[in-house]
Length: 82
Image (cartoon, rainbow, N blue to C red; front, side, top):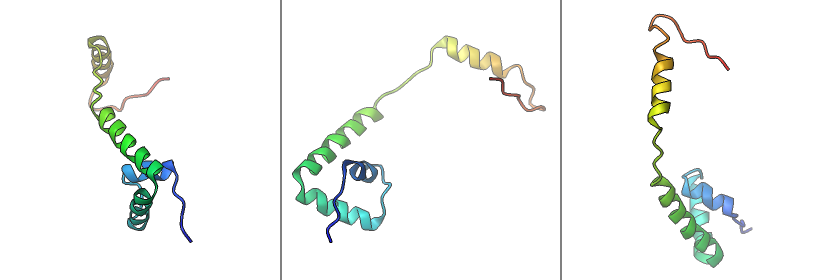
């Protein structure tokens, strides 16, 4: 019986969330299914682009975090408030 792989399976493969057995079967499915291969290549490109995104907090945010952390001594645990 041949397993049909979905786009979700390909995403799991890209992020190394599949077993060795699944890896072998997915590679075979990619070789045989042009649509799946196109999705795989597009997804790799998206992953590469996403990895280039850098988020930097504003100085105001950093200041608030530092101000908050200075409220507590190293000897007592901080109480989280919501």
